[in-house]
Length: 361
Image (cartoon, rainbow, N blue to C red):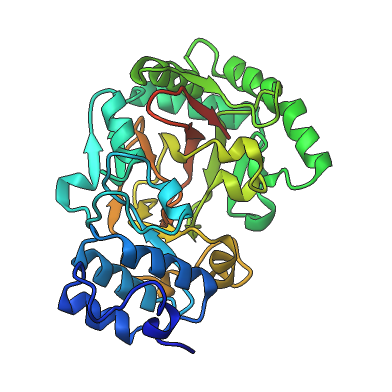
């Protein structure tokens, strides 16, 4: 094990650098890091003179909850997208702060470019559009889908989490990937037809994104010329939960060139059935950038035990008809509920302020 001063002797003198305040200096000199990646991240962070002291202390405390090898990031508030900076080992772009109060959850009668941008860039943790579809239409759509389209359980959540449609995260082999693309547009058409005279929730989201984002939104094609599926219908059974986890396309797609174009992503859920009690969405304002460290802390499971985490930063109790979007790169989970929880979901990809959004499931 090496102290921070021995790790970074050629980069900076921790005890004398003018940009570091005494509390930060003392904290950095006392932390021992053996991970090569953590050394790289800390070295670049120390050279960034605009860092906020309290944010570093906060990050340090949260890292200790996972042990000395943990590498995490916290959402940042900045004028440029944060993921490239994280990949380059920076903790923040221009500023770094903990979100508070109304900053955690935005709410508006309709989606807007600014609201989407704020969640993408970490200026808010999530956004909600209440009554995105009416209670009556939501219940009718849920009834039609459940009655006519049998759902299958995820392999990692047998008896707990079912889905109508094939998730891209499950297409781990060439055979499964081919199956995914073969079913993509067919599944969307079947779901649309099953909704009947009611606009399908995913179609409504597609129009809302097209209208809200200045440069529109398109169906994603990570493999050139092959349209992806969007609008996964997911059922969580009563008294079941989803453990804290992260969803990032770069992990599922093997960091392909096409997926690397996506700088950040959102998760979208339209709630068409919710339990009377429970079923809340819980979110943390941070997560793992490194997949290996995430999997190490998950200990062979698809998620991380809540007992290993500090309390969530935000808890949302969805209502029927709500549209909720958040950054799935942050840890998030779903509490147990007294009844079934039924959502229509997709991911939304961001390539820049002057580029179209994309969506897929």
